[in-house]
Length: 353
Image (cartoon, rainbow, N blue to C red; front, side, top):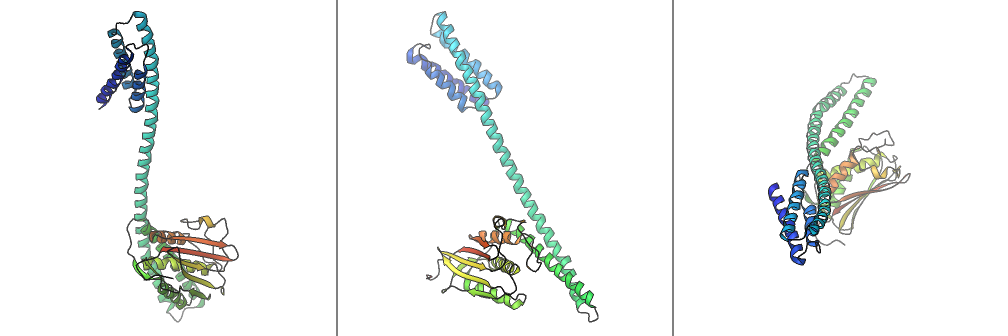
């Protein structure tokens, strides 16, 4: 290949020399085509150092042969040779500069490609390890929690033991939440699509509110404002319920016991709009840009000492984006926060007013 490229380049240079000769029958009067050929070859083709030297010498020989064939006087030959030397020096330096530029660019692209492959492999390996570790942690946590529950059934335990068992169960619940978050991160980073189904969003939100009220774990009133008509969207119910549970638990965590929590369903610009609005402590402005980051430093303790893993909102954002939607937040410190979810509205249902 190298020989072919050099031969083709020599052909172009010879064509430039002969064109200059044919144009004016005097190389001294017109070396334009010769110059064009030199610049073209030096810019387009990439030569190693040895190839550049060899091609420069070969061009000089061709130029000399053409000069002698022209039967010019010796003084004229010397002038033309000096001109050729200047042009060939320019050809050499332009060729080396082009080689350096293209080689540097090629090496950068190669390095970027190699780094991307390494990042993809590391990410896949991390997700595999993360999923395996998180999955294997479930069994010992469940075993500890089961033992604590069995011990609580004993009627003869004292108050201190009861408190300790309650603390063990609470710790197991927190650990299980962290494990579930890690598993969800590993799942969401994979390219595997998840199944969706056409869902009545009013009905879904009703079931969510009813489930939260049935737990009896919260004293805050949860008020649902439905849309006047049925609203449908294609969602994965399990994952979407995880998003709703996360947003509701966060809202309750950062609200006082009697603060109202509002869930609002609407339609805006052919998008289903779901809002979770609390009237609690709000989010500081410097934290807002970071709350959807994984393991974010914007995580805070709740008003009753609840801890945060820094994964919940990151997982929620991943799930919503996989649905083709978006999640945003609007908050004012001391007045509360509003998380807004937008999802593509299914158009294969009766028109919505």
